[in-house]
Image (cartoon, rainbow, N blue to C red):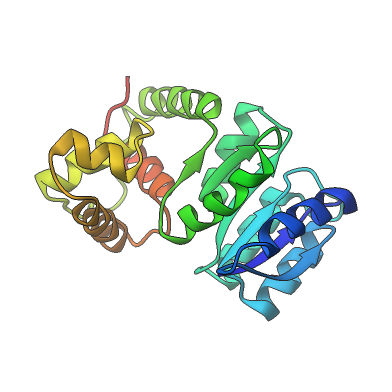
Length: 218
């Protein structure tokens, strides 16, 4: 896995680089100290995963995430930040981030986070997941009277079951246990959901489904 590290603090970049470079299956291909540099490097290096700070000079991490997803849609982005503000979390997910972890996460947990998002999982700090679900519920209420703008792609009943559990913050293993199916089957369902909705991440799918009233989160 090719990883780009983006943070305006050299010490944090160095700590992440040491933690990731120790892993045989992970290669740190570049480092950026601001959002603008991150977009330029991602376009040139095409990393599989980017670790992204939220608050940076020139371009914020959220703006950089938006830029990277436009130029290199295949890059998975994990926000790694001290910010536990709901607005930052929600804007990051809307911009295309696949994970949102606070910087109090243990360094030895970062490689597994990279592997997880590379495999298509969405990773959110548990405390932040509750805030995200609360935001989804608020959005669902606000959108209740808005008519759908375009025909909504039809998901199967099983795909809707999977999407509802994703919206509750469950990972593939938990969904598989809940539905009595294998993790590979869950992955296939998630992949089909993203293909049908033409989206890149699980959280984008949940945001879309709430907006189009396919899901109601209370």
